Amino acid sequence: MKVKVILLLLLGAVAASAAWLLFRDGSTPSPTARITRDGVLLEEINLNQVDAPRSFVLEDESGSNTVAVEKGRIRVSEADCPDQVCVNQGWISSEAVPIVCLPHKLMIEIVNGGGGLDGAAG
Amino acid sequence: MERPVKGAGRIARLALLTAIALTIFMAEAQIPALTTVPGVKLGLANIVTVYIVFSMGPGDALLVLSGRVFLGAVFSGQPMTLIYSAAGGFLSWCTLILLRKLLTRDQIWLASPVAAVFHNLGQLLAAAAVLRSWAVMAYLPYLIIAAVIAGLFTGIAAQALIRRLDKLKK
Image (tube, rainbow over all chains, first blue to last red; front, side, top):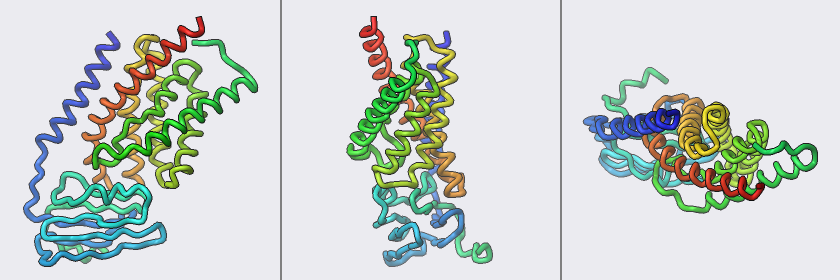
C-alpha cells in the first residue's frame, strides 16, 4: 500500500516534469540576455541586435568567465573554474534554461523583451 | 536493525564508511558528465548514506554524510559546491529519516528515489539563494526525472547491499 502510494507520487512527479518540458513555450521572439552576478545586473543584450559575433570577459575576485554572443544566441566560451559546467552547456537561445556558473555566482538568462529599457534599474 | 556499536568501534566504523563514501564520490567525479544539465549524476555515494540510515541510524548517517560532503568539496577543489551539496544532502537526509519510519526492510530501495528528488530540490533552492533568482528552477523538471532514475538505481544497489550484509550476520 505505502509502496504503491510512493511509487504513484514518484510517477506523478516524473509525468508532471515531462509535461512541463514538453509543453512549455520555448519560443522567444525577441531574446534578451540578462547577465547577473549575485542578483545584480551586469549586462543586458538584445540578441537579435547583435550583428557581429563578439566576446567579453566578466571578472571578479571569485574568477572570470568569457561570454560570447552571436545573433540570437549566447554562451560562456571560457571559465577558470574547475568544473566547466557553464562552458559545457554551450549556446542558449531561448528562455528554456539559464546558464549558471555557481562558483562565480554568475547567471545568464534569456528573457523576452525589448532590452535597453532597464537602464534606470542600475 | 543491528546491535549498536559504541566507543572506538563506532568511530572506526564511521571513519571506514566515510572513506568508502568519499572514494565512491571521487571515483564517480571522474566519469564525464552524462548531460549538459548541471547537477545530473548518479550519486553512487548515497548507497552508503541509505545503508547507514537504515542499518545504523540517522545520527551516524548525518556524521558520515557531513564528512563526505566536506571532504568531497575539499578534494574536488570546489569549495563553493559545499553549499549545494550540504543543502541537498541535508534535505535528502530528512526525507530518509521520515521514510525510515514508513518502509519495511524489503522496501528500502524505494527510499532512494524520493530522497534523490529532495536532494536535487535542496540543491536548486541553495542555487536560487546564492544567485538570488528563481530562474534556476527551470532545471527542476530535468532534475526530478534524473533523480528518480538515478535514485532507483542507487536504491536497488543499497537494497542488495543490505540484503547481503544481513545474510552475513546470521
